[in-house]
Length: 106
Image (spheres, rainbow, N blue to C red):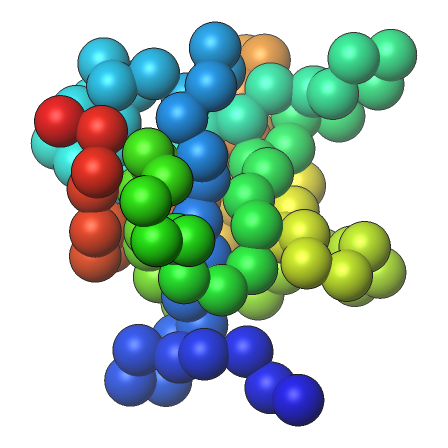
């Protein structure tokens, strides 16, 4: 089964959490980029998301990006680490350009 797409780009989402606040969503919409830090116990900054559309009734954001996900992601998960084409490392953050297609946090 293939993932849902918007045009030629796949759809991803992030759920509202302490690391995905409504304030973060506003900054992401304004900048057109999603940022991610290294996971606990890791040292590689990584943008993390779930594959597919935002589940009904859940608070979060839905987005598309033309940046391919990292190879070997767990089913249902998407990660972007770098530096590599499309993934910028800026200090402790990885950044990817996105188009937010749905926001249920604001």
